[in-house]
Image (cartoon, rainbow, N blue to C red):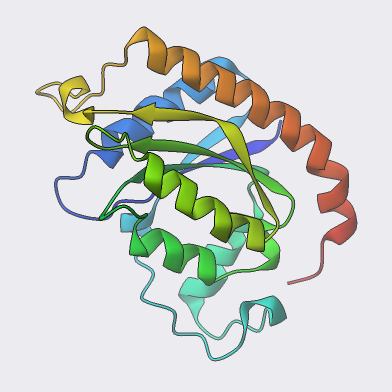
Length: 193
């Protein structure tokens, strides 16, 4: 079964991204097309890019980079769970993407964005330019959650509405379809670490 990594892009204390990511990961498990793992950038603890060589060379000198490379390489598809900060996506997510190159190639990425009235849509649009540069394939299907705080209960659990559940299902269907389509390209382009 292909591996889906649900990447939680917010690292700040008190973030809503954790309950959103946990909900989406559970929805993905119930969907049944993927082995699902949550990858929390707060736990990864990547410093700002500190590698001396360009990522396309895969000449990693730091253990945290080798660990991150192995984690990203193990995924067949991604879902980025991301807030919108000042009309953009988070610096930790950009940093995590920039650390690597080949590990992203020919992998689909779904976007689970959240925020206030905009539901994180501006950040979702901005990151599409970044991920296509590393040969990722962002989906048009997305989960966009406006006024996200209203869906998180006192125990810190996200309680989705029907629209969110339908959006997650549609995005997961498309992730599964595109992952299968791109799989031969990943197999032929794989280069040794």
